[in-house]
Length: 333
Image (cartoon, rainbow, N blue to C red; front, top):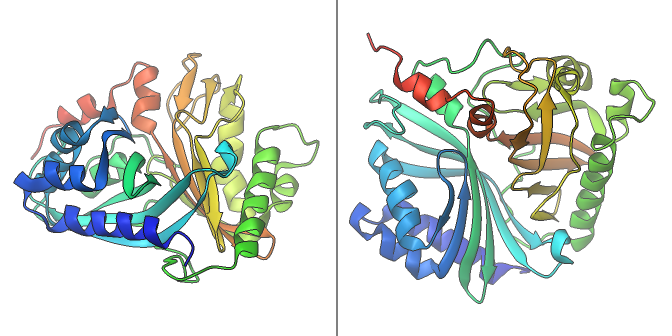
């Protein structure tokens, strides 16, 4: 199948990361990743370089915190990157890392119960090795599972998010190339509309150009998930657009699709100035970066579902608010 070798490298890597002894994690990463492996993750991890640093800073603490960890994938795909002229191959997975939250992580006190770390990961594979990874994860979502409230009440729903309604996101088998082309075209049409904010149409009618009427937007904790164009416009799109000015052009490192699924990530994707308040917080007038992964499911020629990962901790740190430090100071009863 197309991308079989690249997918096999990543699947074997995932299996080894969950099963190996913690002391062997650095060697496991080195076995599957290039020596100068570049890893990007949400705040407070940012950019890490090489197997040892990735192991020490991210995987060892996480494995210690989420004991008996499982990777529960809802989407798995691969494709060539439109951004570099379809030269590089990237493998993408999305879902949850589940485990028993037995030890503190990033100052978040353990619960001793099941916990789900919502994640999405893009991995560039070259010559049988992973050379670059963007792994974005919803830390506020984990905070809320531990009983913390890092943000004011959100506009949309808070829940452990399911995978695709169609249950066909795990693409281990060959997908028709033309389906991936259609998905990428739908994503690019949506990006063109989103980047303008000045179509002359109502927001709802603008969204109808590229989205199904019964779309689902699976947003990050602090914003939440919302269903149908009407509620998405009310609970996220309109509040977001009215909260920001001076939005920069969108930049991506990778944009790809396979079958009915596709997605992209940037570092950052764009920047904007909060001038109208956002997420129940006051406006700061300070330009902030948005590091984002978006994963989409297409139905027909429109987008039906969207899972979005935003580094809200990084954004608010740029505004002078350290959410991690705040939550570490919350008294436990």
